[in-house]
Image (tube, rainbow, N blue to C red; front, side, top):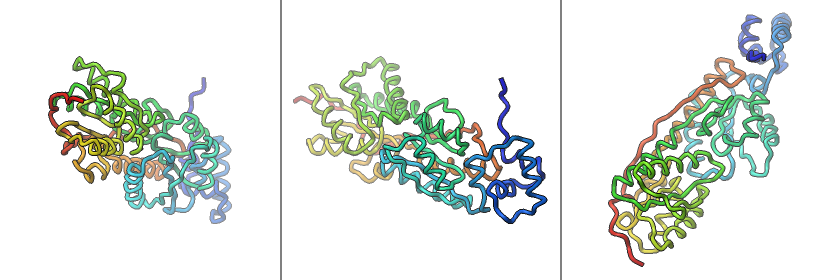
Length: 346
């Protein structure tokens, strides 16, 4: 089996004795390359059997380069906002231009590829749930589109990755609740398409099991990361004959919704019900009581993704390198958690 890596734009530049940008100009059929230099580059391309890909075609234009942040409308506004703030800040540092491409839920993977190619970007940042869509990741690889995946499922090949340990973070939050004395702990899941949500649920279940605690089926309720789904999930949990003393929601939006339902039912948070979230978006510190949550450094993750893209572009990498930036999380304790009271009646 031939496992040789395909030649990159850097290989062509080295063989021709020119810069990566010169190769890009030849690939893009730009006029300001001398005939002699063009001939050397074209011969190197032929000798190496180099196939220009989307990244190579987008590398023209000096420092004026475009990269795209892809998102689907299931992404919450708070999460998307943090990604944008981090990405825009870091893009400016690297003289990159960040564009935002919304990927319609009805679009096929090839539709999105066509959208990316039309945007003429040199690379893409792919947050969840798009980073876990196998058809899209396969299509991006086939078209040679340079990409960084944010918080993808483990084991994804062909992409640079930025992530935290979601499973361990959720386990730490669960252990914190158990340490306060909670035993009836409920979990509101996120969007089923986000594999990070599944990892957080695994961490929750593992921590409960490690402490010999049973997770009743009705204590794990589906959500989709939206505020509305958090309202519906909390209504179900608080209507149980034996409601939980703590709710751990898979993101801050759903945790804020849980607090709203508790207020409506005149249930004191945290005296009668502890509520915790995940992400530490600005919402967590804006609601009352302020939210105990896992701080996922979303802005820093976006910055790291942009840095990986910038370095790959600067080094002329036309294919994805196996690189991982694992960032740290932290548990931020605020006002929404407390030692549980005795079980409430009624």
